[in-house]
Amino acid sequence: MNPWRLYFWNWREIMFKALLKAQIGVMISSMSRSSSGKKKTGAALKVGIAILAIYVILCLFFLFGMISVATCLPLHQAGLDWFYFSLMGVISILLNIIGGIFASKAILFDAKDNELLLAMPVPPAYILLSRMVSLLLLAYAWQTFVLLPAYGVYAVFVGIKPLAGFSMLAVFLLLPLISVTINALLGWLLAVISAKLPFKHLVSVVLYVGFFGLYFYGYSKISVYMKWMMENGNTIAETVKKTLFPVYHLGMAAGEGSLFSLFLFVICAAVPFAILIFILSKSFFFITATRKGKNRKKYKDSDVSVSSVDMALMKKEIRHFGTNSMYMINASTGSVFMLLLLIFAAVKRDMLFSLIDMLPERYEIYIGGAAALILACMVSFNYMSAPSVSIEGKNLWIAKTLPVAPVRILMAKVNMHIVTGSIPVCIAALGLNLILPMDWLSRILTFLLPLCFNAAIAFLGVIMNLRFPKLEWSNETAAVKQGLSPLLTMFLAMALIAAPAFGYGLLAVAGMSWGFLMIVHCIILLASSAGMYFYLKEGGSRRFMEL
Image (cartoon, rainbow, N blue to C red; front, side, top):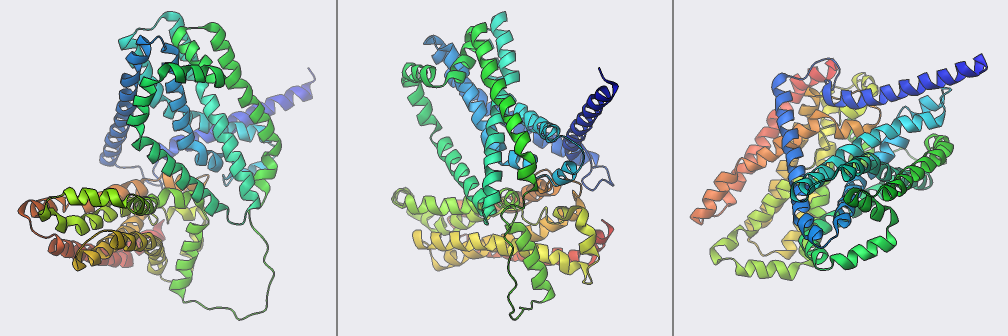
């Protein structure tokens, strides 16, 4: 081979390995390294995070293990072993789509170093493949929660033959290719659509809420679907056999050990993946280099509105939050819950009143208090302020050099959370006031308790982010989802609402009103917010300037 051509191919191989190593390094560092890069995470905190991670993992294994137990024996007794594995494969694909569709857009097309890499003599296909590795690793992680219990339950109840075991391993290794292909294709479509729409972030949020609503609707009906599937297993299996070619051969390969079906499944998994890589590599430069949804505004000679320093800083934070769909989607889950709760209460109003009528008369005084507590619980899932410092990233020096006191910059982040979190609280509280019967004090507390709680979380999030910043990231989604401060803020917020639960329970047993305790709860939350403000004014400001 020509030495220049040999050098060229060796250089491309080295470049791809470097990209792959960097991508895997980012994933590992996001889990193991201190978020600021200056300090190591404390041993006690690492142990706490490990315990929490193990608990979540065990819960997921238990959930899908129960689904496997409920379906394995009935389908085996009906001679539909292949359909059992097809069903679990479909569940794995759906779980990957729900967990990865928006992540694929962020990782593949919205990474902040895409333009930098494209400016270098690096083939777009190499950049794309290195990003795909991250999606594949995530897909394997999600898939493990489904297929490992499915294989284990089948091995215990039925047994696994050597040839079927080989096919199961091959299915496990190849199935993520289908999930990643679907996620990458949907992420690509979202990126292309975003390039043409001026309100791309709103579109992403609406799609996310739609996915979220469908997921919870399906989860609420899972027992009905399971019963229906057991009653009509043969009919469904025949439909799958005729219409879902890859799913059928997945089941035949894993359940029956059919090598021919395994061969066909390999083709169905690998060929679309390779075709998508080829197509995306050709359009990767166009998608990532296009200024998506940004229209140039023509200058008009008019009076310029002037804002105060604090208002200008808060508007800047709100604008940043409102133009980042992944920030909105991940950090304001509680707001989505509140709006879904209001819709449910309006649609199922008759059912709610029938349940209220079934309550003993002595418990009717707790309806308004329960509504306030439920809204406060949902507020705990909002953590808009928790990644607000990390979002600054390498541009943090700009904020630090502004000619304003650091506390005003930090308070802008707090106020952003308070404003964006208060709007859904007020909408949900107003709706519940119109729908549910409650006394005047409960109507006030339905607004007051969640709003006080929202303010306390706003301060708590900024303080946690100052303590555990994550300033090194490839896209802002990593700062929002993978930082330690959002996780700690959310769990500490849950503790703040769960701590008085014992007192509420005692009052309910005694038949006493919750009104006084809720007022005390609000006072404590406001006092905590005041204390955190004074911390931000002194210690928090110093910590901010040291970052």
